[in-house]
Amino acid sequence: MTIPNSLGSNYEAVQRILDNAVSSGVTPGIVTEVWKGDTRWFASAGKADISTGRERAPEELFRIGSAAKAFTAATTLKLVGEGVLSLDDTVAKWLPGLLDDSHYDGGKITLRQLLNQTSGAFNFSMDPEFFADGQGEAWYERRFKVFTPEELVRIALRHPPYNAPGEAFRYSNTQYYLAAMMVEKATGESYGDVLDRLILRPLDLTRTSLPTTQTVIPGPHPVHYSRLHSEDPAAPLRDATESNETTAWSAGGMISSTGDLLTFFSALCSGRILKPAQMEEMFTTVSTDGAGWLPNTRYGLGVWVEQKLQSGVPVWGNGGADYGTFTLVMGDRDGTHMVAGHVNTDWSPQAYEAFLAILDIEFGPPLPNVSPAAK
Image (cartoon, rainbow, N blue to C red):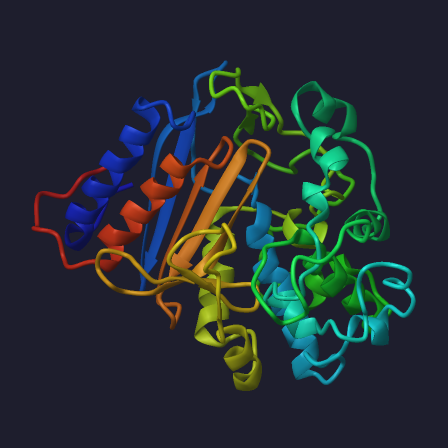
């Protein structure tokens, strides 16, 4: 596509970052899509499929990992705005007995604490046995196994909490399972149906889905190349594209595209999804310091803010990783300038830094104008 003259410098700078990410071996393929007002553009480098040489392309589908948490939070907050739920509701109110005979008091853990990740609930993904089953060849044995949300929550309940409810931020997929289970109990519907009814259909997000047990990505997509959590940095890349996502579900089991992600996050940041009271709650943040999470960030309800771009501009959004996939979607607080990126391999500090560099270009001072690039 032809890049508008006003964006030529930015586009060329972003393209260099993408080309470098591929040439340095960080990723097989990488894409970025930028929306600014009425202007949209897409850039890519590398391969969607190494074996065939197929290049990355617009509107490919991919697994979005924990960026799904923003969808879960938005769905939950819609219900709060409708009076179906309250952020002060406890786990015990909607899921009585679930936390009994465990290290946890369900009467003290609130929906708000689940969504801002301060409940202290242990992350079932980090249970030693569960984690070991997700490494190397063991993952291939597990990838089509179906888990219920309650089964995975009960894995977490074997472990003591990270902290007292509300005391500190600690990233944990368990919290987003509990939140979605509360949604199901409050509505009498499956979480996927509520998500579809309140978020996906109203925004016409036709390329976005929560497939759970469906193992195939339903449309054109890059191969998801993974080292399957091997501790060997030279471990070969393996095809991890097909799997059921019951181990990620409301915490990270969705499929989407850069275009749909930009549509959703723009609508979310601009206030087109939530009422003002719920918007205020979503964007009220807690510190992530000391949690071993991303530096220079604060976490709200399913969204987080990156505070330390070189430009000094705070950007909001979410990102996520799964086997063979890493995505990041960030933008300004009013949703008018958004950037989405995806690599078709595992999360890496280098890929994250590449996306931060692109954000610095987009939200920094204007670059010197040069002749526009074309792609």
